[in-house]
Length: 204
Image 1 (spheres, one colour):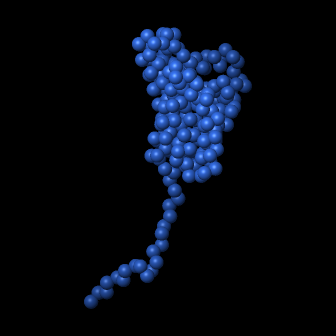
Image 2 (cartoon, rainbow, N blue to C red):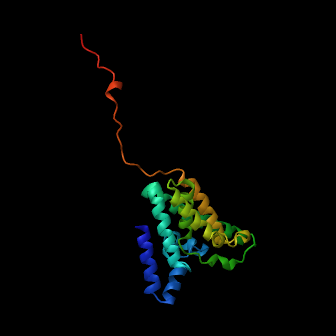
Image 3 (cartoon, rainbow, N blue to C red):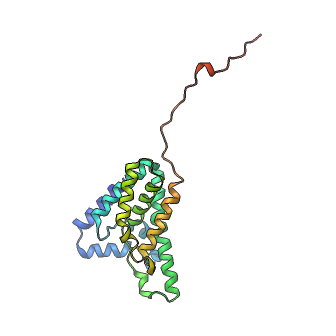
């Protein structure tokens, strides 16, 4: 359902809205320091549904990652992984940026730095599948997607770039949280051989 909502949101924004309307959406839902201070909930939730500069490849990767994670961890487990990856990546990266601005290491203008897209939740889901998946072909495919995107994901990390820091946090979050939830298996009953059932004591 999450993938369907994101796909519909991306389609509407790219096919229906004009450039000015898309710019307004990106500005309002961006997880910038200004927006996080003014309307944090809307920015945190909405930013994941605003497509980045490569919307359709990203949506395809998200569809695969979320489906693979749901198969392994179940719906609630997957939601916890991607939610914490997105929120954790945003809060930590923007928090570090804020500290660097206060310390004079970054210009004040970066409080309005735009950061939108679903890459944080994508990275957390992929990392969890690679680390804790049980289907080898799925784990290999997830690893290939993650490795192919790694240069772009970590671009700017040495310069404390916000997206790069967020991606690292999302990866760590995926590894840690992927160890906790488990996909609830189908209930099974184990029959006990009659020969192992102790005789009922006879009344005297």
